[in-house]
Length: 241
Image 1 (cartoon, rainbow, N blue to C red):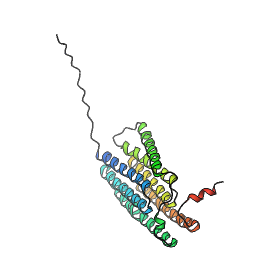
Image 2 (image 1 turned 120 degrees about the horizontal axis):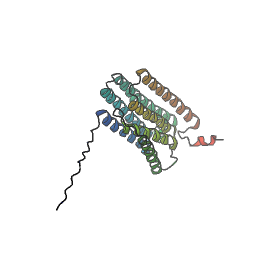
Image 3 (image 1 turned 120 degrees about the vertical axis):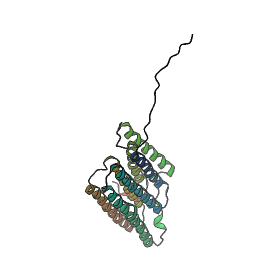
Image 4 (image 1 turned 30 degrees about the vertical axis):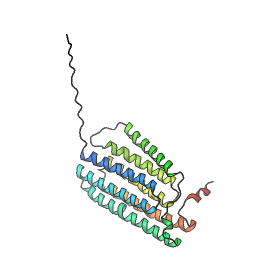
């Protein structure tokens, strides 16, 4: 005698990600990879190029969000963000580097990034650990909603934390400025994912704040180089009390 038992079949249906979720996740990972790439660059102009690429990805995300959530004002924001972050700020940074190199007598001298507080391998490992902490911390919050790309939100927090690491470990003022600007990119990524429906005037105000920050960093870089005759900030530790 054979005893046949039949249990209820369980079918697991996994819904395909939406266009917004898939696009946001891919672009967010690209932004994070560009942030990690800045740790590997020894030339300042390459860091500026990575920042420009990172900013272009954010503009693409704004277009994706505008198309999927039917927010036409984000197209204007995408255009303004691309013009300012991907074109104007990188061009100003490169001209600033060339100008400082001309003052120093060797245009190539100002293009070398300052020394690291740690080795490149140690810095990358720390950045990976910090990124993982930010990613899994947001994932542990249990945010589950069909209109919020949770993965992209987790990656955006990781971008902000990794940008902090870049600002801390690099000992030249240009790299620290790029770290601050890329930190702002991480905040912009979070805003696009969480609150894309903010009024356009607020989004433009954020871009204006970025422009002011770029001008302040430009003045800071020139003053620092004029007094220290170097882009390195290592000697500033002597000012501690």
